[in-house]
Amino acid sequence: MAYLMLLVWSCGSSNEETSLDATITGEESLEEKQLLENGFQQLTEWTAHWKRQVPGFDLHDFKLSRVDSIETIERPEENFITKGNAFFAYLKDQPDGKGTVDIYSYKITFPEEGKPYFNPDSEVTYFRSDGMRERLLFIGPSGAFEDAIWLNSEALLVVGHFESDAGVSPKAWIIYPESQLIHQYESNLTTDDYRREGFLTKRFSVEKQSDGV
Picture (spheres, helix red, strand yellow):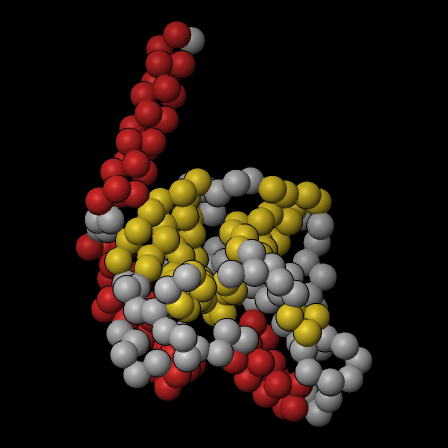
């Protein structure tokens, strides 16, 4: 028993040191960098939107800035987003069937008529196959999540933006639900010309029109 406790403590200590080192040095593994680039290449609508809005946008500018643990907040709740729901087409199914990720329903509310209403906060929600709803990532009024894709069965890429005193910047997060880790990537690009809700407005206005609503 003492040996097992020592082993657990050692692993935990090692993970903390790795996280701290990544936070300070901003160094990422070559494998993860390749995963990130592959994910960007598949998120063509998001990358094209940023390039149109901000000509200086460059996918190669993203660097690992910090590593955080997921602050586990979960409760029993089945996925309520079913066919016919505006968010259904954008659910991201975990490749091994362990659940489904939603990045929009916390942020966006659809009135019976008119354009979507944007709540101040955003959440990356994981509806697990065991009937639990888990918050993977949360951001307040300064930012928003715009798109997402599973890079493999272990890693989820979420992209969006964040506004600071310097302006609006694109951001990316690689989330590892099973490892309970979040790798945050930042770009040095900042702009005052980016319309913060432009991507989401365009996406869901098109979605509503295509449904004939």
